Image (tube, rainbow, N blue to C red; front, side):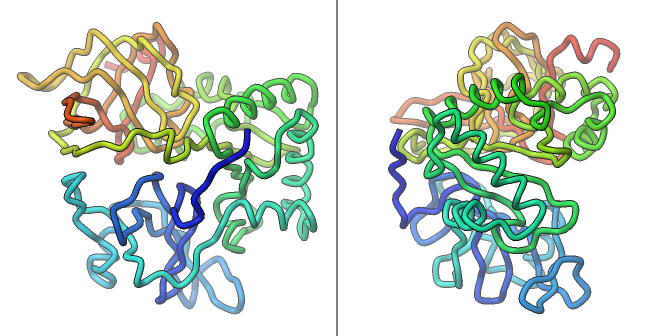
Length: 342
């Protein structure tokens, strides 16, 4: 499938460098006029652990910490977005110095890999191409995109378009069966993944390993961690009229549809929704997330428990309710994995 991407629009995974040298990762595919929703990931710092072109940077992980940092030092990167009823990290167009394109960077890597890590990326892309995948539908994400990769950096690939994403997903499943160098996580190496994804939740981390091992979108390539993000294009993501948060909830429900479980953003339709700690709230019909850790997290028919932010959404004049998963402490887990948690 030919990827129709408007070069003037910023997509999830792109990086923005500001006039001050801050590096933001773009989130989502729809943005307000003159503004790009993006989260601060790298901050110039004299004693930072990463370096490029003679300048050192610190890698930032915690959203609450970065919001505090921006509020104190760069408040123009915190903007209220009326349509979402939220104040979010975001970059006004007038402060953009440079935009980093994942597709362009991946082509550079495959044409002339310059490190051990880049050689492994080129090897993976070649394997996908052997399955009929067009490199034009792929890009490289994360620290490699902005030339800040470290010795412990992993392989982050983006696939553009729903149809292309499904094709890559199925191809990767085949390659993991046919080769030994592309593999799922196992009981020995999955622990760090579980810790990095779920340490801030209420979950029993030991119970989550088997769930992460089953996922296709992450694993190992010649011993190096990989993660794939299957990104729906702007024309494949419905534009909402308005949304507003109603508060944090815990719930139990049954998954009725998981067709979008592998994509970014991912979503699950639910029924029999029951709140565990709230009363009198409208019933949610969907679980929704921009975070990669919530992909492949549940299947149709599963009874699940989740924690997130209940949100009212208006689309084409119709009101509905969903639970957004993504803030610190949020989770989604099949009930079979939580029998002993409470």
